[in-house]
Length: 131
Image (tube, rainbow, N blue to C red; front, side, top):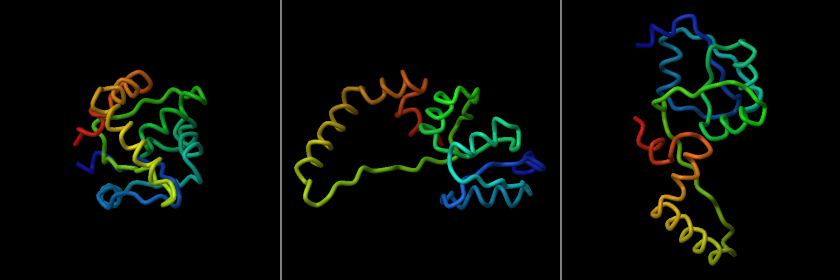
């Protein structure tokens, strides 16, 4: 219910594209939006108490928070999941095939989930299965 967010403030990064559904929630709730120039500045807005929460990439935000020694915690389930894909030059088709094979193998054997769980406390499979 967006009304529970009335008078809350949210930190977003200028220039990023966010899901339409997030914009609708912000508008319905009448939330104040504070824009930062990058992920680190957005995180700093949160830690400084200038915003009540931020919408950010799970992995990079936790890595930044760890590096900067900020005490933050992610809320689950995720609002949305945006898939990112590595890109290769057309001249690197062989490298791309090797990379794809390695990722498939690491996913099938559970190595990717293990790395995520060790570093973030949650597996990639769990992140992707959130509504």
